[in-house]
Length: 376
Image 1 (cartoon, rainbow, N blue to C red):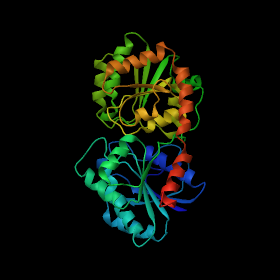
Image 2: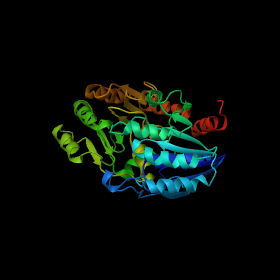
Image 3: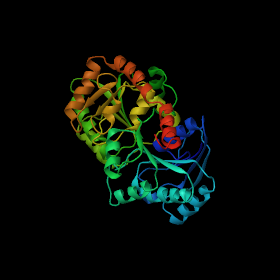
Image 4: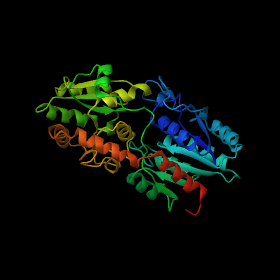
């Protein structure tokens, strides 16, 4: 098939760019694939981070064209007409924010005009974590031009069914992020990061309110009373950083929490995961989490809350521990149990086994089934 992927790609940064790079590389093994990215993804005024560009290695090299301006309707028409001439069999886009609904919907409308091209949306979210006016309208507009969907968790499946009558779709779990390489020995990773020989857990990724870092800070105050554990908080703050630092100080846990307040280049990600005993996802809400799939890539146990699709990925008692959300006491008890019962080896083996379920081959086959056989 001749496949066109629309979406974020290097040199733009972040999980969607990583995902698209891996999707591109795995589809390209069996199909002709091209990738068209943004020349402007977000207006600077709307972007909470320091930069939209990747500062390091691309991880998985991809050839992409930067054509799309997310806020210019004239550009959408021009891009749609240009891409229409390529006669793609399939157009694929990741859908994670309604902000992109008008842009992607319009481009796909022109690509499909008087063509047999099929459009497939891979849905990270249908309804976003942080809702805004216009979300449903923008999503309905984009989905009007979609022929088939892939959802990656039960929560997203339910959201899709609440919005679209009898959609053509498959549920395929979020594949493992292979883009960050293989794990390195823990001692070597800690030496590179100047982390001591101690118990270390990791909170990783963009820091936003729904990810529950404030709950983890409160849990660390409880853990500290009986156990010496270092928490590494690694990621760029999309919330007020000073509020979190004040919270850390007020909870008297500055001595057990180290904060690396920055976006981590691709080539450094593996060091943080390799250095940790396990990863903590104290989310208040979620659909799924790419962080869990990074943890599995490095065979790392995950302690996560029972929200969205996290409990579908983290096998309680096998590859990690599932706890109720917004409950510092339960989260602290899980961390204490993880160490007091020496569960790292058991859960690491469980993570290595569980990650076999999350292959890119399964994603590619689902795409083929949805787009090559209309009777599927």
